Length: 354
Image (cartoon, rainbow, N blue to C red; front, top):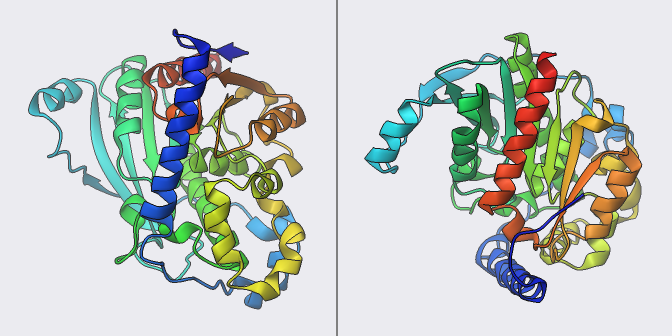
């Protein structure tokens, strides 16, 4: 399936690639490598020999139990008053937190933080849980998504990924420490993200909610991994996820340049790279939900994530893929793409009720 906006194809192709190249340099120089961030060294492999063995079950362990969310009113003071008044008719916005079941020993990242937009009318009992990209600096994308979904009676939840947004440690930038560490550290952050996401989903499921997932870029990768781990999901939609680490490393994209710096800080672990990273390569593991309830969105001109890896994942899982004549960054921010995602979520929610 393909989707294209209006306008000359040559212009969209060129403009998309220019934007991706510029954003890549901004991310790399302005965030991921800015100030030469300290390199982190994981320790889980020292305590658990199975951690680097490449086994999915040993890596993630049993599903975590539901958590007790601590709720608070969300701080929306930066929003225009007229927009707040309109939103108050649609939903209530609250934040929640709870301790991570997979702590890294880095605060405040070891406390999961999330935001919930609960419809005020006609709640259908369906919640979509989302995770944003590697440099997560606001809730805007999910707030806009909630505006689309609340009139359909669908609840929206955003989870801050480890070391990102409101879980960013003092002295670093959002997402900076995700890739700034040796192999063990990067595996530990991925594991924490998936287990935190599983905890959020299981907590909502215990409350009787029917839960689906949506993720952009890095968040799309996390929800793809979660779809191989969490039971009883209603649906999952991933936008431009780094679908396969092997393809990503060959691509020499902006992510790779940041990853390599961290990997080289622990050269003794590099011989185990191929085996150790198997649990975080989604396509090596079966989905825990029907394939027709997983959708992959890909950007044909992606300069960050090889489009072929998304196509290969779609073939492996026999799931739907939607192609856009865009590049990575634009795919994750464009309003008309989000509108498509909202329509897909609404359709899945309707199917879940039957």
